[in-house]
Image 1: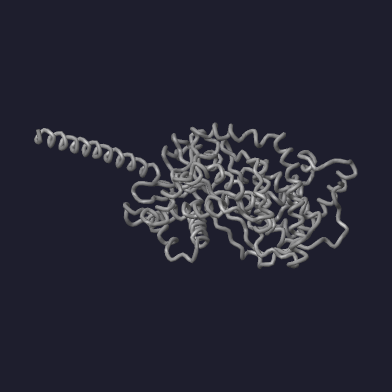
Image 2 (image 1 turned 180 degrees about the vertical axis):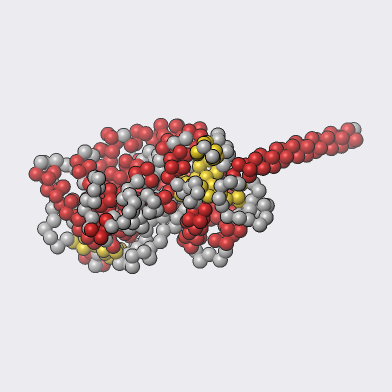
Length: 490
């Protein structure tokens, strides 16, 4: 009997080892085919195929001074690789060990092909790190679940819902004004972190509009769950950049075991948190740019004053239709999103081969990073690409609104296909209209009453650039407007 059991066990082990060996051979063969199909794509050299380009990640993760430092190093590495290797066809090849090929996309034509391909709707495999935190939401889910997720959210972003959100926002804007008035009277109008001004307002409006919940963050402060989510996402970001640390570290086990017990209750809240972070990021970076570009701010105030005068004389409230008249406000928001997109890069994974051109077809099962911020700040697509020039979006076959010195260089002022702050193609952000309306209401309310000034040196505020851009955290000073201004009729 004992010998029979031993025979069964040994046979089982041999069969398992043979199956494993066959799978390993198939895997190596598959990886060899991937290598052959990708080796023509430019990319950094490597000394050992087992490690590939992993030393590049090791270098940026070595001796960091903080999380922001890691993200800046990672961003700078991607920029350096795109500058050095991306000229040929807009694709940079990385080989992260013998198991994980990755491509960086830095050309708009290639990006649009992938964004519009039904075979590139899945998120990249490394999004599984964030899926542990926020579940299979629109941000992380693959194409098989995307339709269900969009169907769940679609009603929240229809025109009728947006009109109701505008009504709801009015009450929260009044509370915002009270907070600003108190700050002016007691602190000289200085918010040492602009997020203190913006984040509670975003929490309250999103809570009421999308969750039918009153957080009352503008009165009682930021809920504790926001801090928890930030910690969990930070662990996810750092696990992506330094997986060798988090595979065995205490933070990782706290992340997996402690969080798994409360995940089911927190997943909806953390999906909400993603929308909160993107809205806060967009508004704070627009404030940062306008706080440093006072001429643009003055021009925006003049447009808002004229708009308020017009709708008051017509007896109209602010609506989805008439706010479209605010062309310069729209341009300021676009220009801010161009320079500081909420998603600096997006990861996708192909299910089927996709033809890029006559000479190149990307094979299936390849992770790609579409480097949106890089493409949106290249001279190839935007003249004076690193400068804040809202007027570029108001041009109609001419140099409208620009001084002569600003029109003496070549290249397009705008390449519309290169503007992708909400992603693009088949998986474009479903909540983009809500985000734009929310920003417009915030800025109309703010600039018809106050002027702002950034209190730091321009360029010193640097965001964390992971898969979501962090909000700005610069000091800002608000003052009541010296002129008579214009106000909405009660």
